[in-house]
Image (tube, rainbow, N blue to C red; front, side, top):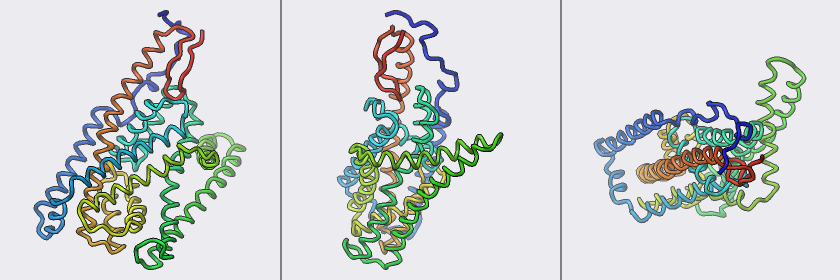
Length: 369
């Protein structure tokens, strides 16, 4: 096979070929040690601290079958994330590469103390490395974040109203049902308003000079991201819509499965609304959201009158699944992603003109003369 000339081989800088920040072996090893230390500390507390006999009993007698169901549900949630990633960023990308990037992002979210931004940073790196334009990545990244957050907000509003009207099982006060629903509706209104304000701010900044250039990019990404998310929704793409529902729905059902495993499950609507409120703790910048998510979920469940021991046991089981399933499958996917990128670079360097090949972020392409 003929060697490509220098003019035909895409020119990239060392920075573009370097791995994403924070995902080299040294950083990953340190994150794993931190997570392992935290997990060990939790195990020692549960095992040794007096007064936790009820919690120990529930965990010791947890149903392995239901825990296995939780693992499957978490993996299905990950596959739904992959579907959303592909639908938002590049529908021409092969499902294999989409899986590698999407699952790698989930692994990064479990390892990096960035409140969920670490995974998106990895996806941005993979797309930029393959030549996808920066402005496109910026607005689609904002749209991706908004779209994956939308089911949480809509779910909070719908379930809150359903609880208030007595449509679903679960007796709670109007404050605990309509309150979250009102906040969710307000969040949607604020987001749409922020997109319009960002557009106005960008137009104003464009008329200025010098330091305004950076503000133009920031406001532009935010405004375009809100507009882009609305455009994607109007397409009624089945893969995108099912992916958004599955990414959230399967993850909530993991918590439901762990409640079935430890016993004493509350009504499903209570699990949903407590989950949607408690997951806000994941915004704290700690690896895998450890501590923030746990306390948020347990606190929200107890507010909705779930016994503390039951809530704690179910949440601990849920968090173990939510942490290790993405870490394991995503870690394997990341190894495959790096192998794919190395193979892609080698293939580009050795293939002759008119050869078709898969390029991450661009799908099947044909090499020119």
